[in-house]
Length: 187
Image 1 (cartoon, rainbow, N blue to C red):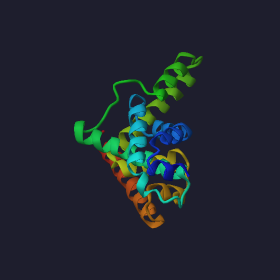
Image 2: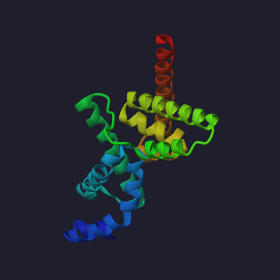
Image 3: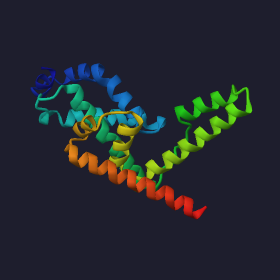
């Protein structure tokens, strides 16, 4: 096992793990943080994995273990952003925004254009709602309702019980609903 070899002093073997799991970690991080932060958070995930290697028991596959670390690194990123600047607005365009601009440029009818604008407005509202949630609840909502993962799978990734995951999801949805209602009342 590579992890035990690293713990016994062969630290150069960590590059094997890095090479094998960098795509997985990058994909997880890219779905959860702005594009300009993906490389930093991915690197932070591997630093955390290296520092925590002594607690890796081997009961779960290494890919699952490093995936959990990547998810928690994303949560730490959002916590830091909230602590530093309040609500974060990324200064650089996201991949979704660039894709939207490309689609908008190719619209042929007014109906296509209107539908594209509605989608963009919905996406902005959803992003605003997600920023209002705690980093853990944001990760939960994104994983279940945007990525379509099962609650049991998300519970395992977050190292929560299934009951806690269901309750947190319900409370997060309720908070988002109240936020939407408050916007409707203020209009």
